[in-house]
Image (tube, rainbow, N blue to C red; front, side, top):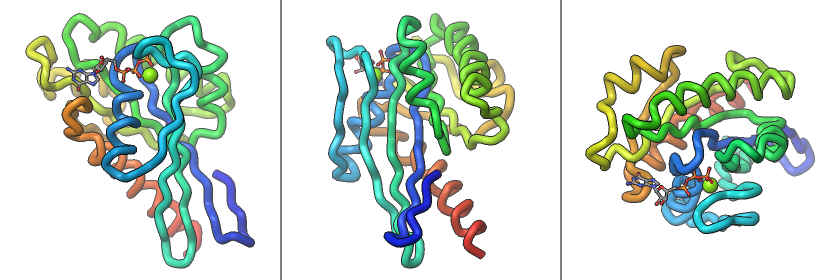
Length: 190
Ligand SMILES: Nc1nc2c(ncn2[C@@H]2O[C@H](COP(=O)(O)OP(=O)(O)OP(=O)(O)O)[C@@H](O)[C@H]2O)c(=O)[nH]1
Ligand SMILES: [Mg+2]
């Protein structure tokens, strides 16, 4: 979080994290369309993110402006250094799950990777609000909500079902974090 007192501006960083091809970029694309944000996609190969995607969303809190910088990490294993760079300074996380049965194990491993990544940048998971998004719920191969909760969401973060390609659950997911971060700022100011 960065506070610019003169401009009455607070900057916060939200990162979309999750296995390769889970729909992180799609979330940001759809959110940008819904909210009229301009999205910057840095170095993409086909549909795979090689560096990161970036957009900003502004919200007014009293006479303050909260500016959310939204990033996606590249999900492919080989981009570990970029993943850590994107994570640095994170204020809130969306953990995008690929809900298809065959990717369950990978999602679980990636949640552990998230914990390890946060430690590498000097944070603990308890310090950062996380919302789980069960994406691709439109696919017949996707697991049901209860089973996903039981097997992946062991720390009981708030969770939202989504089908990002259809814009379903995209705004709702972001809203959970936005509301949390806005009330955090309000608490700080009181
Ligand atoms: N059926 C279905 N497909 C989806 C959904 N969301 C994303 N996809 C598809 O999944 C593929 C990967 O989506 P991306 O948004 O590029 O995934 P990503 O997480 O950014 O992938 P990396 O950048 O490689 O980590 C694309 O073909 C999307 O159209 C969804 O809700 N349902
Ligand atoms: Mg991507």
